[in-house]
Structure formats: C-alpha cells, structure tokens
Length: 459
Image 1 (tube, rainbow, N blue to C red):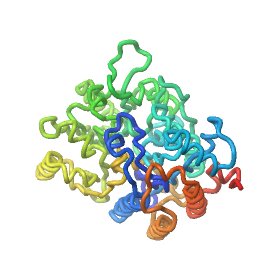
Image 2 (spheres, rainbow, N blue to C red; image 1 turned 30 degrees about the vertical axis):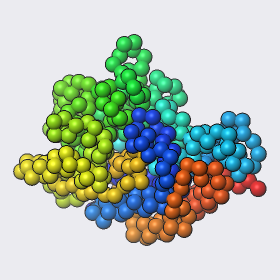
Image 3 (spheres, rainbow, N blue to C red; image 1 turned 90 degrees about the horizontal axis):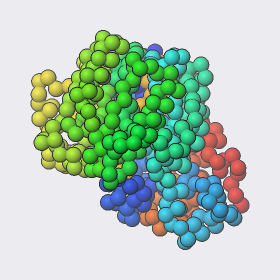
Image 4 (cartoon, rainbow, N blue to C red; image 1 turned 90 degrees about the vertical axis):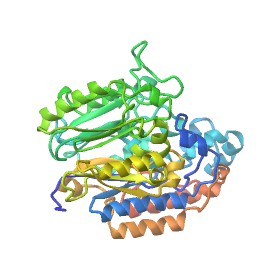
C-alpha cells in the first residue's frame, strides 16, 4: 500500500485491565445474560490484539486506542466519597457495588461508541471532524467522553487537518452513541460520500414511533446536531429511523442489525422503519455525490430471524475492502456466526453466489467481548486518513510488528487471568490498572492523558 494512499483506518480499543461481566447494559441481551460471571481480562485483550494483527497482516492499516482509567475514582468523589483512592474503592464496594461497577467498567474498549467521525472529503472546511459521544443512556458509559475527547485531541493534534468538538449536552433528547449508529458510503475513501445517521427515536416529537421495552439510545436530534457541527449538508446526509420493534429484541445500536462499507449496505430485512425510503434516498444521494451505485444486500427474516442475528452478532461484523479485492468485500465475523446454524447456512450460501458482493468471511474468537455484548464492529472506530494525515498523528498508535509484540508483552505482565465483579473492590486492582496505563502512555507516546497522571498518585 502506498504511503500517500487515502484509506480507512480501523482504530480498535485495547481492552482494559478491569474487563468484567457486571451486566450493566440494559437492552444488551448478552450483557444481561453474562452478568455476574467470571471474566478474563488477559484473554479479552489478547483476543482483541489478535484480530488487529490479522487485519494488519491482511494489508489493512490498523491502529489502537488506549483503555481508560478504571475504576474511575474522580466519579466516585463527585458522589461524595472522600479519602485516599484505595479506601474509596473499598468503601464503595461495600456500600454501593453497582456504583463501583459503573466506575470500573471497561466499556471504552468498544470504540465504535467513542464518537462520530466525518472525513475531510465530506465537510465544509475540508478537515476531518470528531465528536465524542455523550453516551447518556447508560451511567457507566456516560463517564467516557471527557477522556475520549482528550485522547482523540492528542492523537489527531494537527488543527489544520483535524477539528474536535465537545460531546453534546448530556440530555436524554440528545442521546448520542457515536459511530455505532453512523456509516459513511463512498466510491473511494478520498472522494465525497454520503453519511448515514440511524436513530432510535425522535425525542421531541410527541407520539413518534419508539421502542416499548428497551431504551432508544440515539435520537434524531443528536444525529442532526452532529451533522451540523461537522459541516455536512442535506446533499450528503441521510437520516433513517431504526425499527423500534427490533430495538425491543435487543438491537440497541444500528451496528447490531446493519453494517456498510464503500457502496455496500448489508442489513436485516427488519432493521429500519422505512426501508424503501432509506434505499431511495441513499441511492440518489450517492449517485449525485460521486456517480456510484448503492448496493443493498438484505438478509431475509426467514433465513436469519432477528433473534439469531442478535445472538450471533452477524451484523456487528466488520465489512472491509482488502487491498486488490476488486471491489468485493470481506466480512470479519465473530466465531459465534460460524456456530449459529441459520447464520452459517446463510453466509455459506451467499459466498457461493456468482454475483455476491462478499469475497470471503473470516471468523474470529472474541468470546470475552461478545459475552459483554460487543463484537468485531464494536471494537473499532473507522477514520479515513490520507498518507499525510497518518504522518501527522501525534502518537504511536499505528500497529506494526514491534508495537504488536510490545502490547502483547504489556498485557501478559499487567492483566489478571480472571476477574469477578467482587474483585472490583480490591484496591490492588486500582494500583495494577494505573501502573499498566502509566506504562502504556509511554509505549504509545500519548503523554499524561489520565486524571491520576495529572494529579499524581495518592499516598
């Protein structure tokens, strides 16, 4: 791949040292089902790194984003707890274990929720824009955006190339879950495209269609606000509502029921409220923007019921274009898809079709992430970068052989093999996590991005 080439880079989240199964995410069926079980932070981190390395070896440009400081003691101090950090963790573990679990969640690993990114070819000022997601629907996730913004500003530091925004106000009507509900379509990554925003509810319209059992985490109001601040236009944006009925079946984000890349949208028959309208608008706008034709690959409910799609995370696969792929796509799928009879039969049949847009399916063991409700697509944030953009990055985050080996060694030295929700109250875990993250910022050349680094370790 030429250094000057503009490509879509996958920024995968490194799984943090406090990866655990606390069952915090209401509406995420896998999270609910595995709550309270033993987790393996070491295995989770190594599984994620293995996927990154495999994509790197396949010719993709792969990058990493660091975990966040957990347990996050500044949050607990905001709630009235005082004393040295170690004693706070122990006290909250005794008095309010659910609050401690929220402060200790390793959920920043799912960087599809880190924010929304609009590439330079789409924006009014020709810069790539970043908006961290406020993640207001879940307490444990609402803690992420200040540090997410800090990390993104450090990595994408060149103000002539990159523009950064704060998260939207933390209000239910502006609930924003980031790139998990946003897909960009284009003919080539460096040419103008169309940005597809999918929302769960129009929060400020009385009587608007909405799910009844689980929360709609993305609002139309938030999606439109992100588009405005990124300098997008009506000509290069499409806003589509999720089908409320599938949200109530565990489809908490659009990337649990649809995935896209370049000109291909791969989605379930029941994904959207008004599928025909969406197809017509996306097709017309992509043709107008770059003369390309949208390809719609709809999975029939008779072939793969919604329950199987959610159970296997078929649509939380990554859809990528490998070098020299001649316009066809590769699906990076969780091993669960190979073990689900309906999904495996559908994918096998799709690959046998002469006109299939899929070239191959590669299966990965991401069981630790999957048990918390996050598949391959949850683990990555897509950022279009030119060769000059990549050279301007302000940290050592692009994966290569040396960084991969270094991160493997870092995980093996710092991560526990097993962790239970009760272990979160162990003050030694706090110290272990901080020691690991302090070393990681040196490995990645990030500087002091964590609160404990700025304030100094408590005595």
